[in-house]
Image (cartoon, rainbow, N blue to C red; front, side, top):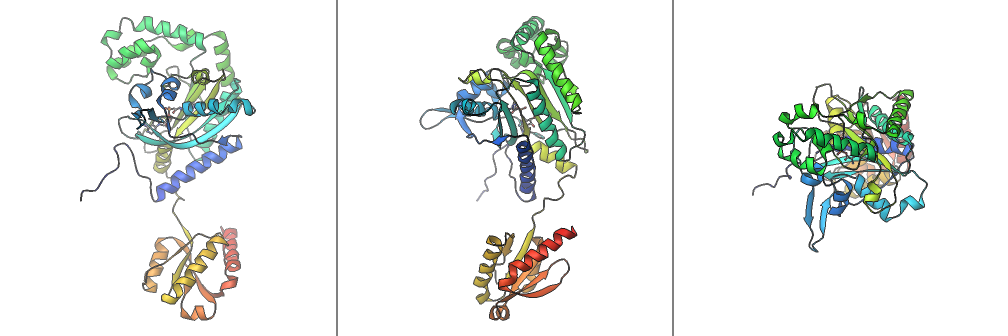
Length: 431
Ligand code: HAM
């Protein structure tokens, strides 16, 4: 029968790679916790309107990339294409802004779905880790979110991350800028791509994201946001730059950075890293400040700021740069019963070692030669083998063998956990 393959743009994560994802995610969580963020788990499925209103009708995500479908009750649902709008829906619905000190600091991790053209670093189902800090408008809140993201990337071992920052200004600044863009593109739009034509009508700012090579020279000549900023937005952006400099966080100002989601205002940023192999997976993370998103979703007027990392891209660059060396699965003990009578006793001992000793233990269930069992133990990277035969059952004992030094000893079952505790603590001090 023909085998069924995974859906285009999705990918299976298994073996050592699973450990890499878990290592990366748990490091991200633990650092976010140091910054006083708490975990949150919104559903993967949301009503379509969460993203149409949240991410915005002029964004490519909403226009072209969402997995949207009616369910059997004819409700229009969407598999989340990002977290931020869903988090905001969760905060508004559960009134978390009223029952918590602000800023409300939340982190999340999980799969997101976008119908994009699959290519290097671009999937249709991928994983994001991110944070949102909601309900405080201080430029220091934006700064701290950038510092947190940068700290995580450095802690993963990435050196030379480029942080690109820009400001989109407040509403007045953006309205003035949009007018200027409309004026500029008025004479060019006829010769630009179909997407740009509809962006021109919906939100001319989105034209700046266009990747069509023929459109780029026109876009390069467009007015820059910097010339349309209000005094307040200019001052805010300068405060963020000063704070980043004091905190010794390197950054570059990129005036062409506008981000592809409609909810942003004021500060926006992206994190870029080129692996030593020179492969460019695109930004490893990105984010920004949003002033009106909560209101768009029916909540009070509270701003927020956050970022999301693309975990696939981060795991790829870590792998390329050899920064994922210690993710092989290992076993503390591999239990080897010799003969039918030993199997149940062996299982009892395996359960004891796991439940009372906290050791990672696997056991051989097959009737096979001792030599084969040792091969399996080696393949599973076991530190110790534990052998139980007829003789050992009679004496209430087991044989344990250190698979590195080949030393072996006979131990009474009721002394087993103490013995392993001693052996493993010795190993730890040697390491
Ligand atoms: P975003 O730039 O759309 O922002 O996505 C964040 C990150 O997700 C990107 O920098 C990239 O690493 C990763 N990513 C995006 N698309 C793909 C893809 N097709 N395949 C693999 N990785 C991808 C957001 O999602 C915002 N919610 C960020 C944010 C949080 N802004 C404020 N708070």
